Each structure stands twice: as structure tokens, then as C-alpha cells.
Image (tube, rainbow, N blue to C red; front, top):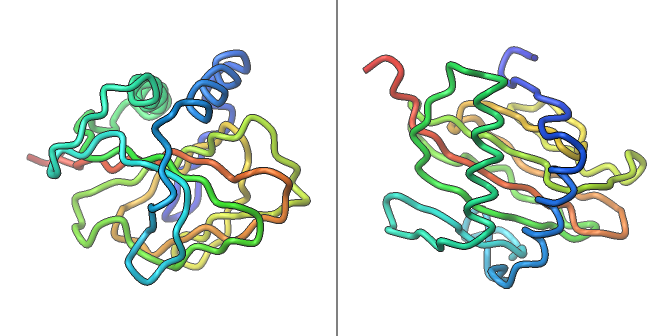
Length: 174
């Protein structure tokens, strides 16, 4: 754990992680029109759930992503169970993200789950949160305030760098 980011490594048991990766990445819900903001390059991904936009795909991927979030909560029991958005994303080799915020609000938490089942550390592809770089590692979750500047740096590997992005309302003080 750093000042701004909580890190959970080896979130899922290995066989469950492999199953989730294979089932989510093979489902026909992915689009090629996602981006972190309008000025950013397009990435592969989809919105599985968005409370405000009324999106709920009711897909296998949404169900598995919800289970993965509950596993995060077993590691951080104080994390609220108020999901506002779940998105899938995949960046190709040499594709940097733009630095952005997931929300301007101070009462939102981001959980970024590294979905890949395999990844060579030599390929790079870290996530930068508030100026600090965090290695992309399979089966890792990063937890941080949604209003912190962050973005994914380009990897150089042979496969997409996949992730699940969750936005949670932090209503613990209410």
C-alpha cells in the first residue's frame, strides 16, 4: 500500500482467475469504440454496468466482474458495496492512455483489476496514479480515489493488456 493506492496481489485463486480471463475475453460484448475521454485513442472495451446511464448488460462478463469485485471486498471489508459503473478495457501494445480522472467527485473509489492471465514483466504497461507507477501484474487490483489523475502506459507485449474498471460510491460517512 502506498499513500494513494492500495494494492491487492493474487486476488483470485489461480483456476478462478484463468476461468474469468478466458470467459470474459471471449464473450461477444467487446466494442472498439471505448476511450477514457474524448481526446483519447479508442480502445477495445465495453460498459457492463452503469447506474446513471441505465446500462446493465446482464452478460456472463457482468456477473463474473461482480464476483471479482466481491473478492476485492473480502480483502478490504470496509469497501462499500455501492457499484456505480463496471467497464472492461483492453489496450494493444504501444497504446498509451491519456492521463484522466474516473470522476471529479471526492466520494468515488476506483478499483482497477488487471485481468490478464499471463503477462511478462518485460512488456511493461504500468498504471500511473498521481504520478506513481504501478506494475501491470495479472490478478492484481489497485484501489484509489476516482478523482486522482491516472492512466495506463503502453505495454510492448504480444497480447492486449486487459482490465476491469469499477467505480464505487464511497458512502461510508453517510
